[in-house]
Length: 502
Image (cartoon, rainbow, N blue to C red; front, side, top):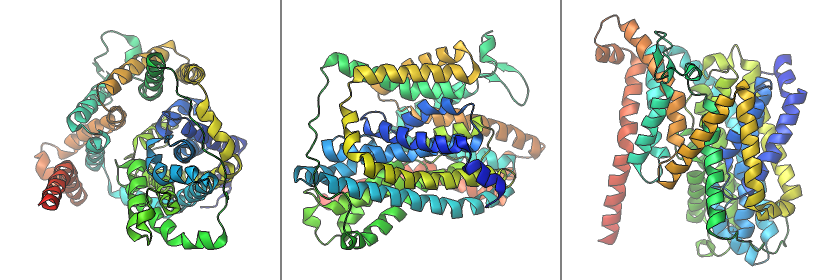
């Protein structure tokens, strides 16, 4: 684990600069309402193209966790969550601000986020290698089923309308087949355009779907109405909790960290669900339940500890099985593949010096995030007052430069612009963009795995072939359960609602 190569990757100048930039940039992105971790990772991904793989992934993972933390600042002080993951902390955090305890709430959120993120990084360190070793039994049939299982979480990324989410996923699969067939070497859907023979470049498409579409929405809001200026709550109170106050929160912190970790490991739910689950469980175990919603600092501790703990949890299936635990993790997976890092056993053996450098870098990022947050929280909230007319052009410039720099090609800039318009119209009509990303990444893996498995079957019935392999049989069962889980949960919720009314 602690080899000279790993330490060299971890403490290289690129890694240190990437770590600092990732934390600062992530907090800044999280503080600005409407941006968020997914867009932050998408915008900064092109900047990693010329970096060493370890340094690049350290920076991206730092952006991921820091952006989720940064959103709590405006959530608490302005009642405006910087990211959806911080919605739960706005409930009691803003009430504390109105009571003149805004800094106390910020301190609780910062320390909770640091502990939750660091806990998830430690668990990533212990959980990832065994899971990666388990992937040794995987061959082409299992890789096909793993990718297929990853595609089944599209329903959980689809938002309120599963049908639209599935259609978004189908669109992503259609985009993924453009270019050369890797097995047979034939052109598909290129229409004589040479630039399409290598397929649609993933990173420009990601930037367009998440960043440019968001800029268009911000610009539309700016045209429709004048920008609202938020009134910043009074920054008073004690920033750091006293020792007795902290000790009293330890059970809450441990419970919320575990909840966040498990929510993160399960593909789909994400930090928003983790934050709300942590908050609800804190309320359930609290002695002063009647104070929740009126300024209970336990709610802030729980929500912010849990939502940052989901980040390390999401990296577990991403790094071991290639199944992203969230939309931001899906972009991280794209970054890994961009740098030649393939999830699974090889990542923790032949590329172990890189894998462990990423994990330890992620751990350090969470600690640095807490330190920076405590030092700058009272000043960072002013970023939220920056006008959209200034922020939007900056995002566009970064997106264009990043898209062009990947292949030094204006074609990629065009792809970014087209996908920006597509993403804008998708979001305006209620179609989720995250399923498109997931399908683009996993579609090729599923296709190649299926074709290779068909060749391995040598004419045997494919159902018998798959069910005759124990691991494949287990994966088939998991896929079926995953497909029907949303309908089962919906049925159970309706039953519970009917019972409650009667």
